Length: 256
Image (cartoon, rainbow, N blue to C red; front, side, top):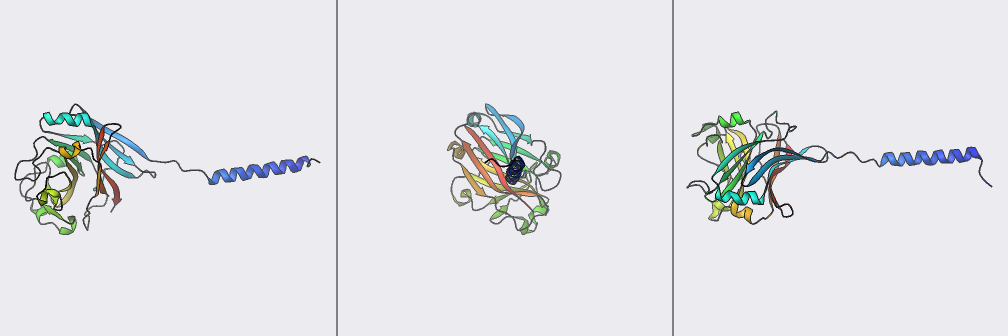
């Protein structure tokens, strides 16, 4: 015996409502994870480009540069170079502390002695000030930085004696191999001017990049921060064998 028509309609309505309810409860929020590409510059026999990434919530997670292995290989026969890279539009750099631009330096013979970095290497500076402010940094003594509160300096780091024009005062991690009678391969450098943190830079030797070995390390953090903002807590040196591409980045940003 078939159920009455009105009962069939009620059963179908209940099934439909149940299905809609279940569908509503299983909706997945739209992911905001994305990569935003910025400026590209000639580099070796090819180019290098800047980028930043956001996580599932749209929060900044990584800033870096990418370049092909073939481009880097050609740098060995080319003179030293230095250039600025503008980051993609949309990255909030309005307040200190936030990354404003990237400066890439290629040193074909390394720094002049008595530096510990006298072999060919690449510097990737992530600056938290604009280019005009950076270019206004004077060389010589910087008494404010030399005498700044040590809580703003990460553990194991030591300040250089002088400020470098257009850069500032470098602070080096004394646990690095180069401070212990071994060849330099990679390190993370802090840079200050007038006792303010102006940049963070990974440095990596050409010899290490030629090994195509992936590397990551924690960025040692100071006890205190002068400015609120997003600070990186890790840095990466990556090589993708399928694309023959290097990436050097600062990652895992934490807001202070």
